[in-house]
Amino acid sequence: MTASAERSSLHVADQGDLLPPPALGWHVARRRLAHSFATRPTVVTARHFAGNPDDDAATVIDHGWQLEGFPRIPLEPIAWEQAARAHRSWGFRLHTWSFLDPVVREYLDTGAPDLLAWCVRVAGSWVRAHQAGNEPADDGGTMAWYDMALSLRAPRLAWLLRTALTSGESLPDGQVEVLYQATLAHQRALGRAAAYNGRNNHGFYTAVGQMVLAREMRPLPGMARLHAQGRARLADIAGRQFLPDGGHAEHSPGYHQMLLRDFRLAQDLGLVTDPAVRRRLERARSVLDWMVQPDGRLVQFGDTADLATDARPDRSDRGDVEAVAFPESGYAFARAGRRRDGEMYLAQTAAFHSRAHKHADDGAVVWHDRGHEWLVDGGRFGYAELLPADSPLRARGFYYGTPERQYVESSTAHTTVTCDRQDHERRARAPYGSGIVDAQVRDGHVRLRSSVDHGHWTHRRSVVALPGRWLLLLDQVDSSDTGDHVFQTWLNLPGDAEVVREADRLRVARTDPEAVLWIQSWGEGGHLIRPVRGETGPPLRGWRSVQDRQLDPAWSTGYESGPTGHHLFRVLLHHGDHPAAGVPEHPFDTER
Image 1: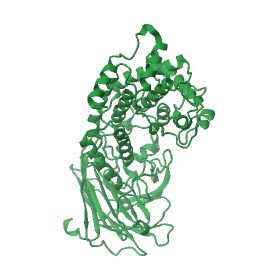
Image 2 (image 1 turned 120 degrees about the vertical axis):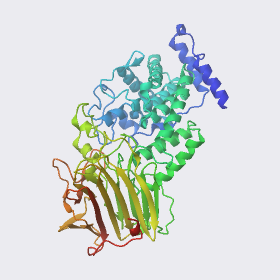
Image 3 (image 1 turned 90 degrees about the vertical axis):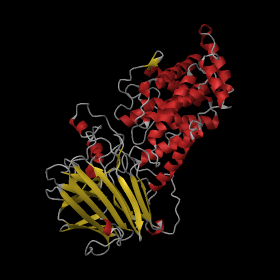
Image 4 (image 1 turned 90 degrees about the horizontal axis):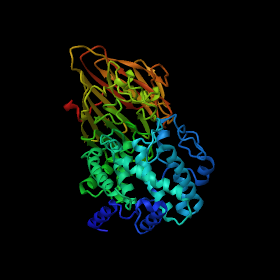
């Protein structure tokens, strides 16, 4: 169908010409809609039913729905108003209707009518619980009409109504009409201004959700307007989510991967047609390749869970030293060596585009070398119930109420620098964009640089490395006010390492007898911060979250200055049987 023909078709549908007069009743409307849908291509595919990949239809029907480590919830019968209320992520996912996915996948394979009947019945019970007449009911805090739940549920609802109408199965009129009324309610809900948040990735899902619903439900009145609105919203959000250098604007490789995947799905569905957006998505794919650590998992900056990835960096295996900066999105990376020989991988983040998924992690570093990880990040832990609006923790930039979540967001959980042991400001300080300066390779060495203004102090960081040999953290901190401050440079090390203190230096050993790292500070004094592992505090220190809702012990240490207005930390991490005799020379010496 040409674009002009599609617009014409949508215009006709928008007038409701395919529906009979209301006086003829739902039974007649159902027959006419079934005929119309039977002649139109579908846009909802099996890819929209990818949730709960480890479950099968029989398990879900007989025993209920389960999300990851949460308890399984029986679906017949179910008290919708109470289900999954204990955790935001749990509740949100329930109300996307992902519980349908294993059953729909089996129905698509077998066409078994009892599977479709089950989906219609359970979805209908949800609608009756969460829809007052033809409008969304007050969800009472269940997240039933949360913008993301609404957006991700819409394609499932569209598929279910269309399939119920066209399958030829003798589904009760009343059950199908419930889905029809729900579709109109979702149409109105998605079209409202409150459903679209252009400041974060939720706006993308609203735009795509309404466009899929509109395309799938073309015979229904008002769908052309919903589609046009979604197209305008998608054009708006595309320029906000991926920045010109291809990096995602929400500080998290995990969200970069998720949005790239879903943008490409929207592109495959014909929803993304702008050539400029398509080119930006290609750049985003190349950025994602740099976010893959030697273990094949995404680097855990920001709100990134411990994610395996299908990204495959396009690298030669010559062992070349490479480095790249993405100065608009706020990332820098370096890698060297062959994976089979223990590839060196170095990543740095320095960005503040908005509060979306922003941790107090300006300048944070992750480092792998010689087949081991050495500097790690705090991870995500997952989301929890929101703090009360008047909580003092809100003023410190926290939204969620659990101490574990607050810890992984804090500066101490990242290999970065703090002033007076305070987290980086995320509320009173205006977002600065990117703090990445550059990434360079010279004579086999690499250097990543960043510069961040924290308001009353500034931090300039150079990370210099000779792959397979050493890494040097150079942190220049300067007070911008009239007072002296105590500065800290934090180091977070894997919890399975053996850490032994020798005066003001550390010996760090892994299970591999040849994997020994020495950490020591040089230059303007400062003393070692006591190394701790899994300290419960309060406050918490020495943890990381590899899996959501789980903290694992990690080593937390670093160096601290005395009261001063200016300080330069020189912290060397050096491989070998013996500590280094001094700071090694490198080809960037003359520039710092």
